[in-house]
Length: 447
Image (cartoon, rainbow, N blue to C red):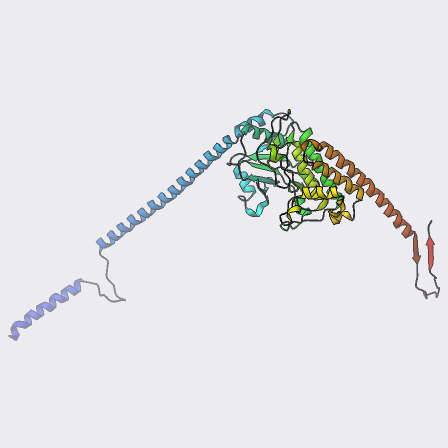
């Protein structure tokens, strides 16, 4: 039995040995390790290449899709801008500008929306100069480093494109030192953007009422207030009578009167000016103006005229004289409207009770009374009884000349008193000098 099994066992062991010899893999960690199957390796590489190819195609498709999206979006935006440009009268404005080529007339510049976006840092809130019922004004810096004010209206008031373009051209030609100059416009937006010269010292409202949002406000003395009134009246008179076509402002108020770095007055309009025909038959019926400044006749006629500007300016004069706001809901109902409040005290003969104390101590009573009489004249209920802006400007200019003469007289009188006081002086020297000399007190009087 045993002799039969041994050869079988030996044969198994030899076969096993032979198989082990043929397989050179030892399976140990530091040995020859196991070799990969070539077919498996080739299949893995093939799959990897396919996956990378698919990923590359997907990435290319995504980039191409994004590029096409951006291009399509830009194309749509350009077409929209072109549509707005035509809708807002851009072609007509280009024709108007071309017609003035070779002449000395100033023409408005047509800005692109990209230019104004760059100038305002995409209309950043930090660039806001002021907000109102008509829109928002931004401070902008153009590529040539010129600083401008850009008006972005809330609503589109363009009912007649041709009239709007004519207004833009006309206003850009106004070259008055007391009127904020219109530099140009952008017609590539739904509502046109108007670009004006930048006036650095804020509005008269900021300084007169010491608006807490304006940190650079300063006290306006009587001389400056009289200067503001005179220059603003002259600017409005120019618009009414001296411009190539008569213009009414329609929103005269103290916050629309600016001061530059030299305290020169600048009347701003920011798109509310309107041309009126020479025969005065075309009157605006569009709701404009600000409560507290509106002509009482407007509520009956729905028409604003040059005399409406006169009434609104009368409210401005009352503000300069009293230091009160045109309309203040914090006050009792009887005192809220400054125009009515002012007329009431004037009729009672109590003018000095409502004059701003900071000018009451400086101005002469005669000057204040004359200023108040001009104000009262402007605030008459019936427009036909009000003066023209030319008459208002002449009255204020005469008052300003008188103030200057009075000021010079006061200065001369003060100088004479100072000389008289300086003519009497004392010279006193300490006694007991090195030479032991003693100087007594001496008084010299120069006659």
